[in-house]
Image 1: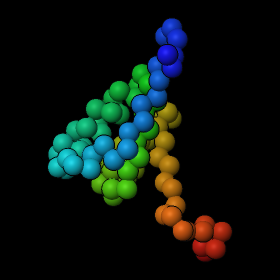
Image 2: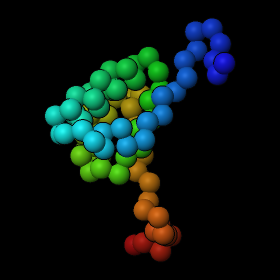
Image 3: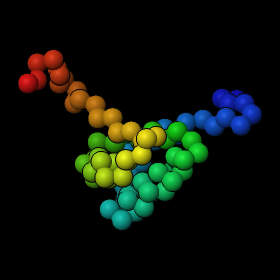
Image 4: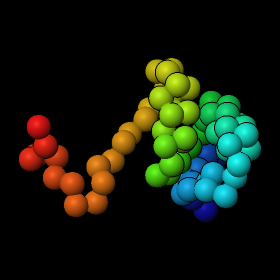
Length: 79
């Protein structure tokens, strides 16, 4: 078992909206945001619509958007 007692495991999702139309993708992200009140949810995505949703929606103290650099991008040389 990964947890004991009242603990919950984080939910890790990769490209969960990749095959969804825009309406379904936004509804899915809204539902995941609601569920995140009770557990940690991490969504990995390269879709701009997911980033845009996150920038508009994740405004609470417990919400966080982390954007990773593209492969091969050296942030030390960027100016």
